[in-house]
Amino acid sequence: MNNSHNRIGYLFKTGRTQRINSNSPNDFFYGADYLRSKGLDINIIDVNMLGISGKMGVLTTLITLPFYKLTGLHLAIIYRFLRILRKAGINNYEVLITTTTALGIAMSFLKKIGFIRSKIIFIIMGLGDFMKSPVRSYFLRKILSDVSLLSISKGEINHIFKNTKNNIM
Image (cartoon, rainbow, N blue to C red; front, side, top):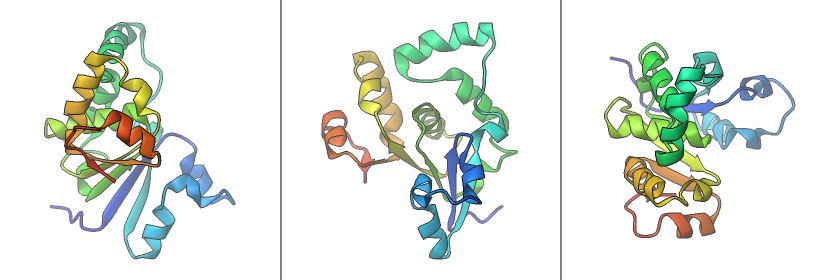
């Protein structure tokens, strides 16, 4: 069994790993440098390197797109995540942090059904547009109930998550 204590994985799309060794501002990493300076084991995980994101074939698109528009769940990302979950050591982290909406929702769903055991912090940005549909809003409220949501917009929190049981930071 791997010790996940104090291990935090930040999941980003392509580009963040290149910025680590450049002179880019560190605010692109949402506190990773600060947490590392406090002795935590911080890992930047490039989801493209894991094969989670990328182009879909025609059949996958025909299946995924309608379901995604209806519920907010991106089936291709969920499937790809399931394929690499053990190999990538995703459950070896105490906490997983993500900012990407499709990835955050997919990870939240996988946590809800028990495939991800790590705590998830989903930094939400623009999720309000995603929840305009009543059907999608219903599904997302259920899926997001087991993760911690972090928003930099109090208005977004008040608008989207009133009357929910989410752990909102």
